[in-house]
Image: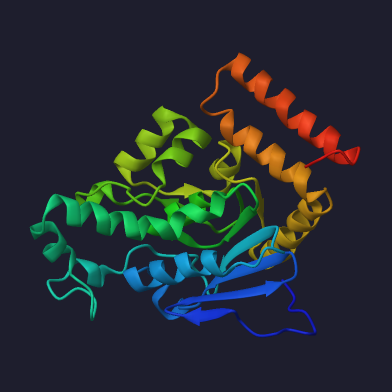
Length: 267
């Protein structure tokens, strides 16, 4: 996406993450293409901080990555005895108490949770490899536009682990339990055509058209009134857990709020 002429500079640029804000649109970019945007606890903290730094004017967040790969997943240094500088190794975490281990994983997950806030619509622009933690980061967003060279894979199970960065819920919601299990248990690649046909991706385009396609999608979202989009997103998110009658009730309440607001009677 083109930078604005009055570019104020990044609001955050550290540990492989850059956040820029242009009025209603924030862009979060993974900036370590030399390592295929491999992920680490420091990167996860930077992603969580990006979410905290968003000003109230932001309505849409674009997640993108520099280079040929969106994210090749967890940096393999995590599996060495030394781990990352200044961080407990995964081996050290495993040797600690249950409460400490749970709290650490919960902290890591914070990088993946804010993308589905009801006041935002998040769009991931995904090219090349999106493996493991990279796949889960794309799944953290509301929508996904993929390049025709995309390769999703959930490799945690093949490493003796499970996907624990909030990816299992959206994956099952998008493709169903049986296909989600098969994707995770086999660790196979999911290419662009299958991603679109199963609902994993909203749209696939040639790689050189990825940013323009995301720009067009975000522009279309921003064309609708903000409060209507917020209410609609909340309705659709709630539909996953409400039964039919409860959803009908929620629709009536939301529409009542919208009508009162449009009539100038809102609180």
